Length: 429
Image (cartoon, rainbow, N blue to C red; front, side, top):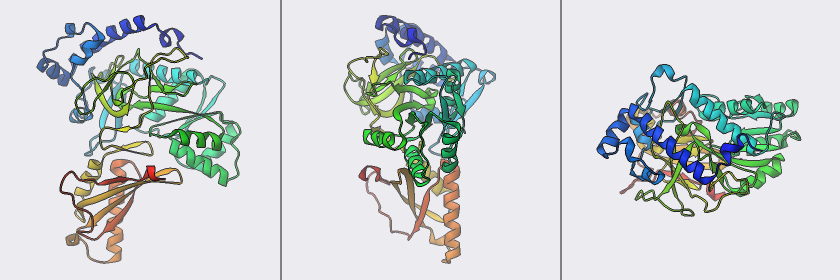
């Protein structure tokens, strides 16, 4: 079950030589980006200074805020005419992170997805239903083109209309699905309500949000699938960065395309195998938007040993974040995004609280915000108008449905130190 056995099982010494060669090429490519020219000059680093893989530690980190500051095309290393597609991630203050792709980038990305799908036994005989967003989110098109590359029959059902999704699974004999794990649980519950057996399903590919092994067992029991974890970030192409093999004990990162480090998120010190810290990735085959030592914010560790499937070192499943980002139904949300929206609305104040719950296996976010009495008439109709306005503004920015509760001025907690505005209650269930 290999898509490219030679590259996937490359001996360590040969792989290290390939990584070093591609790292040097990446260092040349980033010279086309002003941000990196300045950073490397400040650090006194020239392309010839990178002679070993350990020398990557001499290079500066890149963080998400750097990418936001470069909006829209500041991190593109090729002319815009060579960028054939643009995706974006959510922005914390209204401006998203923009990611560009050349034709070669799209080919590389589809190839990585094809590796993942083949690794878990999917072939051109499978019928694949892709139940994730097909908009600017990378999950939809990323898996779509990779599945087509394998030769699978692809159903681009996208999100929503769960009953119709279930009908398609039954009518088309779908064998494999891709969605967030929380939506998969919702799908299973609706199928049970409909008394609709999903007998054709064999494989479930789930990602874009953290999920536990207990949830894996429940999904497998309810849907009759073997469930696999998927990991990716838009900044690193999208999904396809890492994936479970049939052992389902950690995720394989494709080391020919990504140079991986684990660091102490506070000190930046590089940690050893088996030590949990923040995942840092230098992509090695990106043309349009090469990056150096990108700090993902995701907490994991590198396994000490390899894997029986011979695909090299794995990382542990993601256990959390080193920052305050929330993942709600596969969408990244920062409290600062919410604050930015609320500050634009004069009818409400700047004090708010966010509550995240898991209801019927779906993430739900409730935002409590204080009314500004100077802009409120006191009438119930006006209250409804303000609530509707806040909901719309949040939906337009976050691309996410939220519940908004308007509360009395002064009723929400105040903080002397760093405000703790988020209460995530998903782990209490």
